[in-house]
Image 1 (tube, helix red, strand yellow):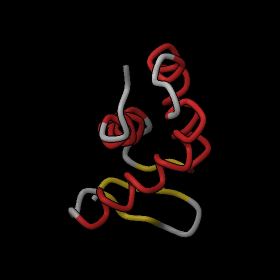
Image 2 (image 1 turned 60 degrees about the horizontal axis):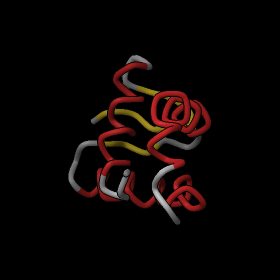
Image 3 (image 1 turned 45 degrees about the vertical axis):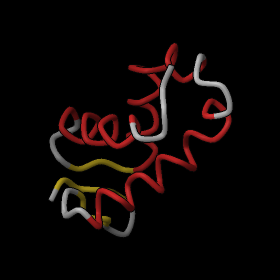
Image 4 (image 1 turned 180 degrees about the vertical axis):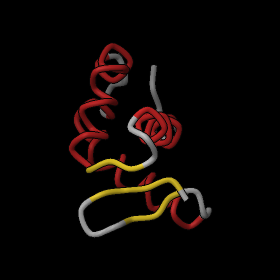
Length: 76
């Protein structure tokens, strides 16, 4: 079962697989394609994961691991 904290690693994974920078939609698609089963089994997180993904990205930004651009995110 997935937890909110897993979303941080999944965002980083999506960015690495996308060459280090990607639009939010691309990141969400990547997470869904790779982790759909885990998300479906995660209870309430299944309904909030895209919102929670954004909050986890904010934590990554504060930790210096992610840069938010106007329409995309980039590995720092």
